[in-house]
Amino acid sequence: MKTKRILLLGLAASLSGLAGEQEHRALAQVGFVDPSLVVSWNQTINEIGFADPFAFIKPIRAHVIMHIAMHDALNAVIPLYRQYAYRGHDPGAHPIAAAAQAARDVGISQYPDQQARLDAELARWLSAIPDTPHKSQGIAVGRQSAAAILALRVNDGWDFQGTYTFSNEPGAYQTTPPWNGFVLQPGFRYAKPFGLRSPDQFRPGPPPRLDSAQYAAAFNEVNDFGRVDSVVRTPDQTLYAVWWLEFAETSVNRLARELAARRSLHLWQASRMFALLNMSLYDGYVAVFDSKYEYNHWRPYTAIRQAALDNNPATVADLNWESLRPAPPFPDYVSGHAAVTGATMDILARTFGDNVPFTMATTTAPAEMPTRSFRSFSSAAAECADSRVRVGFHFRYATDAGLALGRAVAGWLDEKLLVFRGASPQ
Image 1 (cartoon, rainbow, N blue to C red):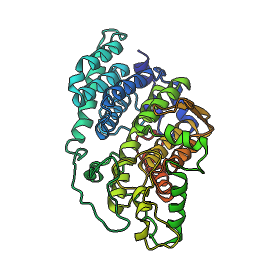
Image 2: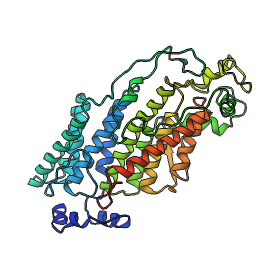
Image 3: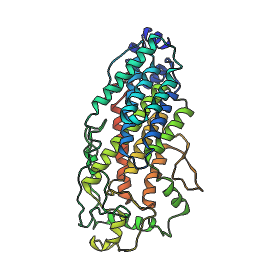
Image 4: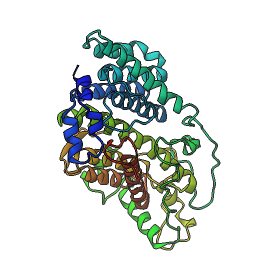
């Protein structure tokens, strides 16, 4: 078996001190380069988790746990990257069996009603592996890896609903149509992150004062460009405002699957990328909800209609103002979509390099704009952030702060977690 031969040749020991280009040389020595295993499981759990159109936090968390379990299982066999939860090692185990079993066990723990589909996916991968002790050892490693991360996430607070009281103070968030007093899970700001030290680790400073020039400039921009009947928003801006409405947990995972396959990303790299990608989504949202409910800032819909209360002579109320599309049911600052798209695009840039042209599709794409092409991951993230102003959801300072927050989260995770074993985390 190639895995065992590599380790017997001393690959694990030779990894110390390797960095940069040497990491790629180390990967080149390892078989199992095809990323299809992790790509397939990502698609499976994505389809299961988001089959419910109202699902939000649970499927993101399921993605993270599954991909960590797969990553740890692979690196229990050939230790290229540092493990997260499971620290066991078995150089005789078959890595495909280990990672597939880990994915299946996590999947069933989160979606027990989908056992038949998950078992069928597992059987598809195991059937290609000869019935040898290596296969049995791999299955055991996978089970142990899944159990380790699942134990670590017991009572992590992902489903804590929390409480919320609306305020009539100028600048405070108020319900917007069609939500009628509903706010989305204010307690999520207290959930345990996967990689951040705390939800407020990168909390930005507060939004500008209502009577400031910065606030007035952002107010007037979204008033003009984000309204449903805007006469200054260009046709292209209108189209991409709607195009970007699909959330990153589905759109960027889809893009990552396409890129991993098309660019022949090594299985070990793909496993790490998907773990960090989804970790940046989860931790990004935790950090976003911390900021949103800490500052409780009103949406443009409320701000423009109640501008007479903001004590700013540069703003004018419009009692009939409506955004291009209805805003989600939580406060404005910071923009969650800007943050998590910024975070995930940064993980892709750290994996492939930023200046990688790509074409992307979304499920919310208008008929006349099914795809958009970008010259880099950072330019895509910047356009996504801009789209939230054009659609009327956010002030510019909320998207700017969200984009910076997301990049800070991604940088922290990439530099501190699942690092190449030749590089020491600082």
